[in-house]
Image 1 (cartoon, one colour):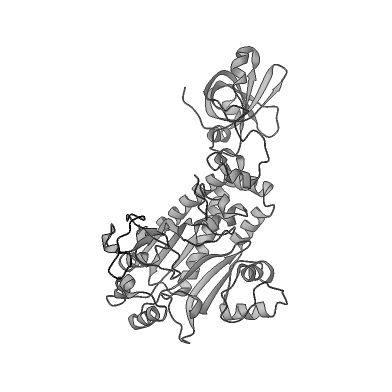
Image 2 (cartoon, one colour):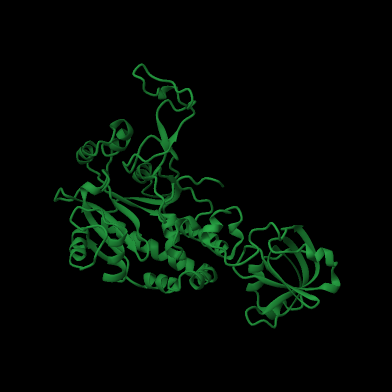
Length: 465
């Protein structure tokens, strides 16, 4: 008999399957007994919903049934019947049960409901089996798929940028070194410095913080590309919004100006939300009920509302006149903090906001200068609860201006000469942005900690799994 997944079974019209025999396989979430009958809630990971298995004790050996506990893996053959329970129209009456793997009740750590998220982080190898993380990781899959679908349907090309690099795109220097050198016996130059010529690549290398610079090369040849891959920041930050390893989506588009860039970013966010609402509603509804009662309303509000667009300077004026007691002071030239961003989004405008034209001193060297020579054609997209979720800009396409910005920011020319050279040969206006995948996951799931939206979080002093 061919196995059917629980998600597919529950999608079928009940009257079309009642009376049929079927085979399901999965993990026991709960088992309760009533006289000579056991009720098993079976979940196979395909949906947040469980299938109720009704087990007549007279059909099975008592010692065998004792082995079927929470967490055990089983296969069940039986007949589908109408269920008296209001939440699910069908249930499966078991005729045969195969026990694939036991989960001893005195050892399995997920015996009870209501485990804290902090506890579940300590057992990251088992937490996907909970309702919460099953929902989150299904949403994560659908979000990744929808990102690829969005760009593919718009004619973008998926461009693979390197994970190992010599360039620091963000200029912060918080990078993880990549080396094959013996750390207990490092080769040294005559000046006493590490001799990287002896290393695998013959020079100092690190894990990438962004695929943007290489992505621009793709856009200046293919027109419109996007990257989607892991990035790494060696930032010693133990906050609810930071990871050392995370995923980034970075589209780069030739012949796009800053307005085109903003239009694409808004369209992109709304597309992803719409896709998730259409394909993950049960999981989103579960998270709405369990963790964030405003999640579904907030997602629908963002989907249906035009984003507010204003300059950084206007935003500073609003914040100064807000009479809010911010922890971080507000003045022109400050790098806005999450409290500032969330005030604009959640209290002042009550909608997502796109800020533009930031001071050049607080933005990266590659952003295009405005005519005032004080600000750059940058844009940040701010959303409720999270704050900044997208950062982007029109890129500087003028060779001389980019050369000057590289010097002003003390970026080593040996690391970016190739990037500068693209402004010498067939330079063109182009723009792009970056969306942090896990930040967006926080937004669409209502979770409060970024460690709870990635299967195996990498944070300072945490790399157990």
